[in-house]
Amino acid sequence: QKEVEQDPGPLSVPEGAIVSLNCTYSNSAFQYFMWYRQYSRKGPELLMYTYSSGNKEDGRFTAQVDKSSKYISLFIRDSQPSDSATYLCAMSADSSASKIIFGSGTRLSIRP
Amino acid sequence: GAVVSQHPSWVICKSGTSVKIECRSLDFQATTMFWYRQFPKQSLMLMATSNEGSKATYEQGVEKDKFLINHASLTLSTLTVTSAHPEDSSFYICSAQTGGSVSYEQYFGPGTRLTVT
Image 1 (spheres, each protein chain N blue to C red):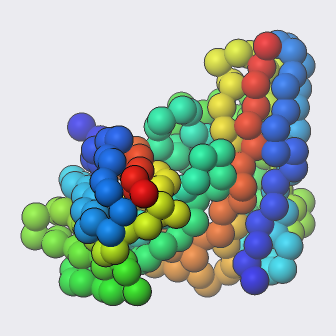
Image 2: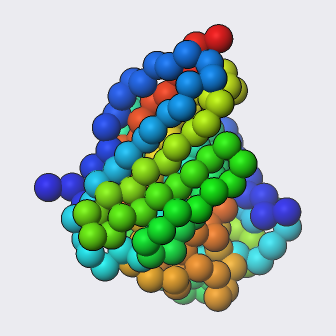
């Protein structure tokens, strides 16, 4: 079993829709939860990070962490064609320069 | 701020040759650099972690004699793929972190696409 599971998609939604992206994980030691956006043939770009459980909002993006269920989500409101990319969830166990474990990424396409 | 560059962005080499990829932190000092490999439609897999002036720590299953990592300064790390084979064709991404940073404060380079023919 992979430490982090993420549905690869592809996921296609119309412009303006709410997008829900999810990951599950098995390692209860994970404390830091991140979402990265990666455009084709580019490096990943950090979108949001959350420490432990709870919600965090930044503009159109909301990250949720439920440690009891080992489940994290990223919601995108009012989706735009420019949001079309691959979204990677990622996690690490502690705050130091420790290894980040990435999900396989979900390819998202926003239709105009 | 926090810009990481990679060079080259794309390289083609013949089987059996070696290729060097550079990773530079342009506006900060990177005490730790990470090298990842990403196959098509797959996740980033950590290959090795390097601290400036020290030998790199390789992940299980990564051949340290094949993937040579040198972190000679606080702004430069290099990955040399020796005796490259077609199965080494992949997207190689580096990231950099300053001392005392938390795990999410890794800044990623744009990646280098390696094709071995």
